Structures are given as C-alpha cells and as structure tokens.
Image 1 (tube, rainbow, N blue to C red):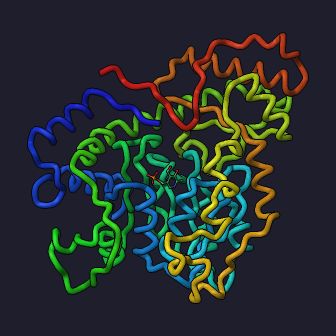
Image 2: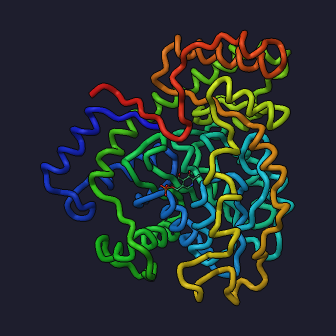
Image 3: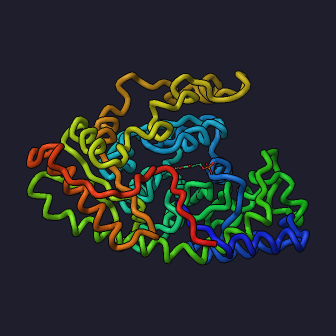
Length: 416
Ligand SMILES: Cc1ncc(COP(=O)(O)O)c(C=O)c1O
C-alpha cells in the first residue's frame, strides 16, 4: 500500500529535466535517500537495489552465505525469501509460523542442525516477528539474522525499526509496499566490510563508480543498480511514511477497541508481537476453524491469509520441486557442497502453519480511511461475526457499503 501524488510527479520531473538519471557522478537523489533512510532506521548503511528480491540475495551474499549452508525461513512469506536462499547456492529449511503469522521462535530453535547458518524472520503483512526471542536463539547458536522487512517498511519492534535489529535487513519498494518507486529495494546494515560486499552484489561495477579499495575484492554479481528516478520518488515517499503508519495504527486501534465486545461471542484478534509498534496495515482475527473463517469473508469481504497464493510454501515450485537454478549444474539441491544439508521436504511439512493460515482473516487498514469508513468496518466485522458465531442469520446481517479491499493492492491515490 502506498500513497503518491503531485510531489512525486514533481520530483521525478525534476530529475528528468536535469538529465541526471544515473546515480553515480551525476545525480544525488539515491545518495540522499540512502543517507536519510539509514538515519531513519538507525543503521550505518543503506544500499539501494532494483528490488526486494535482489536486496535479499545481496544481503545473503554480503554475510557470506553459500553452498553448504542451510537457512531457516518461515512457511508463510513471499517466495523471494526462499528463492534468494537458492540464488546464493544455499538450502532453505522451512519452519512453522505461529498465530501472529510470523516465524515461530520455538520452530526455529527446533529446526537448527549442524549446517544451519542463518535465519530469516519476515515481518509479514507488516506484523512484527518476535525479534527478542529470535535474536537470543541466534546468539545461542551463532546464527546470522537476515530480517526480511520487505512488507514491513515503516514498522518497528518495540521501538526499533524493522530491518535494523538483525545483522542485516532487506526491504522492497515495489508497488504493494508502504513506500514505493514502482519497483525497488535495498539493504540495511552496520558492518562496513559487509556493506562493501552488498554493494558489489547489487552492482559488480560499483568499485569502479565509487573508487577501488584494497579492503575488499570485487566478485561477479547481477546488476541491480537503482536509478535517480527511484531515488527521487523515494525521497518524497519517506516524508509521507510516518504519517501513514500513524494513521494506520490509529485505525487498527479503533477497530480493535470497536470489536472488543465481540470477544464474548468468540471473535479473537490474532496475537501480535509488538502491539502499537508494527505497521498496522492489517487487523487479523484467528477463527476457531477454516470453515468459520471462510464464512466470515463471504459475509464481509476480507482476506484469509492462507488464500494469498504465492505467500505460502505450498506454492513455491522452485523449492518443492527442487528446481533451484536455471542451469542444472548450479542447482543447490544437487550440489556436492550441499550433500549434508536437508534438501527434501516431507508432504506433512508445516501442517500447523497451513491450519493457522486458513483460520486467519485479515482486514486491511488504510491511512485515508475516514472515521465513517472505520465505523463501517467495525459494524461489518460485528455483523459477520454475529452470523459466524450463530447470533444472527445471514439474512439479518445488515452490512454497510464498505469499499471492497484487496489486501494485495490498494488503488486509492492522493488527489494530484
Ligand atoms: C516478504 C517479501 N520478501 C521479499 C519480497 C521481494 O520483493 P520484490 O518484489 O521487490 O522483489 C517481497 C515482495 O513482495 C515480500 O513481500
């Protein structure tokens, strides 16, 4: 979800008029954004990339992951979290989420094996992972923590910004995110040497544009350099971010307060790891059964987390079918270096996650919702819950006309 208006149009127009579309040596927008966003996150470095997928892979390359390593990831995340692991030659080990729809720390600890090198907590749908628990587990077992904050732009865990808590954090600025430049992404981190490697992974020619240093050796990587158009748009988007997040947090609180009396009936908000700090892009409810969740979304159009396709491991063909690379000789699933890694996935994998996801309903917030919009949402949640929990018949549910919201895509724009 994002908001964009005349300021973005003006900023992009300025870059095009200036002719300075290349970030190195000519333009200054990418540099300015990287500095500002690093400061916003409380990190030493932020390196822009062309996508969140590329940022994840660059982060993994930066910290030195590769063949022979297993990386623990959650059963519910966009498939790029898994494919990034494969692109660096490592093996993703998929573990359960809990009712917060984020990675279950107990499942992480239980899955650690002799080849486990890293874990990727994903702040899915803007909800916070249990970062204190994950960081403690990582410390105990010497794991690297790569935070996938692609869906968590602007959110925090107990006051610390998503993406700044682990050893390295990856962000996406694609069309569906809280800040967008159409496509885009980047890596946040503190370590200077890792930052050099991340920048080389994003642009193998980066040492040429920015000056050679004896401290690091360039290696081959795919080009995913950011453009000045991206930087210009993100500089405007960053100014909007906190206001949007505050508005969504206020709406989430209003919805949760408004539906609290329905707790007596059986309506249960999903547990959250950092109430009041996360992005608040969704209000989630955990239903007692998948049937109850299906009935609810039929009455009040909203989204079942388990029905969002690409976000659940059952849809990740590259992983489940072992097609880990374009060329068979580079397929991590068959590489000799990965012989001691767990390269197969049982049919029973993460059944608990599938059960939770099919019982979890998400109602989207929006920073431009009026108090009336929010009241209508509260009313409709109440009406649908009363039907689901048997207090009303479907015919008796007097739903208000709320604009149907697609949780993946919001098309509401600021007036230009
Ligand atoms: C959790 C998560 N990780 C990674 C990505 C990849 O980002 P991009 O689409 O910018 O490549 C996304 C994008 O949707 C995502 O949601």
